[in-house]
Structures are given as structure tokens and as C-alpha cells.
Image 1: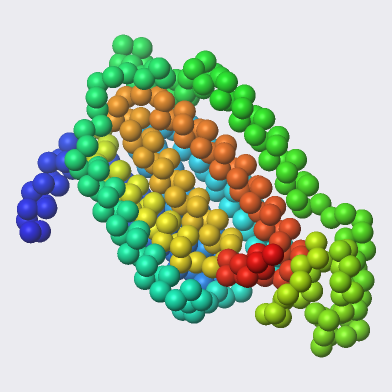
Image 2: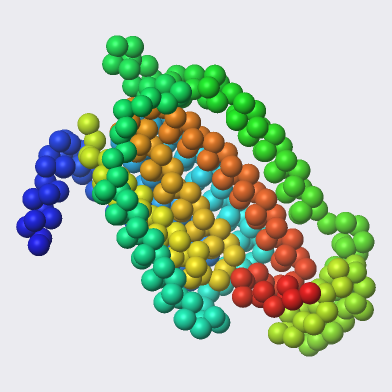
Length: 235
Length: 101
């Protein structure tokens, strides 16, 4: 069995140089270890750091496949902006406490999750093995590497994005503006709400035993602290 | 030339599966978001792999757009998480009984 698998794998690896094969192996290991770390780390901060590891591994694999610009963007946008945003929110909210991985509120959900994802993985592998991807048809986007006119991948990608995909590019600009406005609206506190929070804080300072019972139920008070039996949601 | 695209696709499948397991298994909303990022990265890796295999720049353009949409998604998603946290301490996906009208 192992010999048969090896006999199948060796010709695939043989086409690549030792450097490429080693780079792929190291990067793939980095990606998988980081991904496993994200889902098994109890502390959200550790999960975010493992996510950085995965993103760097994926960036290396992008470089391996001549997508240098995308690798740079991957590091700058994902590792530089998105993960920092995650860490900022984790620290801001103070949720960097341990997570309970054993307790299962929905009975049997976790085993079912593993089974379902295993089925999906099997389906993907079967599709990948049995499907012939290369139909020979050319897309409208153009070739990535033209041996007659060698260009950097930045030039090729830029030309594609600013000609073929110009309209989607404009749409993403609108999407980003909408996302920024949405984030501001979501994160902003109205004056009444801020006042209510201040009063809550003051009352909590006087009566630390009952922080959940001080709200008067008005819409500006926000929700009372969670005590497992929240019945009414007023706003 | 780098290793065969089959290996990249296999890695992409594995990464997607790990992300899907994490999304279903974890309770912390922030970690669930990170698992969504893992799945997006798996899709990006598959796009770049096909761009190389088929010598077509469309795959790389698609990764560019996926990156932009992922950034927008994270900004809005984390804004929602912060808004939920302001109303009630804690944000785990188990608290769905609050949604019962």
C-alpha cells in the first residue's frame, strides 16, 4: 500500500527541483500546523497568532507559484491588518480567557461536525482525482505567463484588474466605503447609550454583588448582565 | 517549476476542512471568524494553483477580489461582535436562546 502510494507520488515530485519540493513541504507543514493551532488553541490570542503562521505559509506557497504580488498583499492585508484587527478586538473586549472545548451544549454536534467535514473532504478528493480541469478553452482574463513577452506578475495582474475586471474593481471600492461606514455605525455609541453605561458603571461600583439587577429596563440601559435567564429584550 | 498542482490542491482541501471543522466545533465568535479566514485562504490557494496550472491570470484576479471582500467582511463582522459585547458580556454562539422573540 505504502509502496504503491510512493510509486504514484514520486513521479509527481520528480518534476520539481529539490528546493521547490522542500519549500512546499515546509510551507505546507506550516499551514497545517497553524490551522490546527487555530481550532485547538483555547486562548483566542494564541489562535490569532497561529492564524498568522498559516497566512505566512500560504504567502510562501503563493511565491512558489509565481504570484509574488498576491503574496505581498497576503502578508500586508491579512497578517498586517486583519489579524491585528482581530487581536485589537480580543484585547479591547477582554475575552482572552480560556475557552471550554469539552463541554458540548448541543449533544453530538462535534462528532457530527467531524463526520460531515470528512464527507466533504472525501467528496473534494474524489472530484479532484476524477475531474479533468484543463478543457483547453481560454478565459477572457488573459494568460498569466507569456513566454514570448515575459512580464512581471504585477504588470499582468494590474492589466487584468484595470481592464477586464474594471467594473468589479469599482464595485469593491464602493464595498469598502460601505464597510467603513457600517463599522462606524455599529461601533459608535449614541449619547443616551453612553450616559446609561456610565450610570451602570457607577451603580456597579456601589453594589458589586448585583450588577444585573440595577437596570431599570429602559431602552438606554442596554441588556442586564447575563445570568442565564434573560427573558425580556426591550430594544 | 514547483511541485505538481495536485499537492497544492490537496493542501487546499485539507486547509478548507480544518477551517470547516473549526467553524462547527468552536463556540467563540472571534475564533469562528478566524476559521472563516482559514477557509477563504484555502479557496485563495486553489485559485492561485489553477491560475498557474491553466496559465490564466483570472485566478489571481479573483484572489485579489477575495482579499478585498475578506477585509470588508472582517471589519463589519468585528463591528457586530463589538456591538453585541456592548449590550451583553460575552459572545458565544450558544446564546441563541436570546433570539426567541
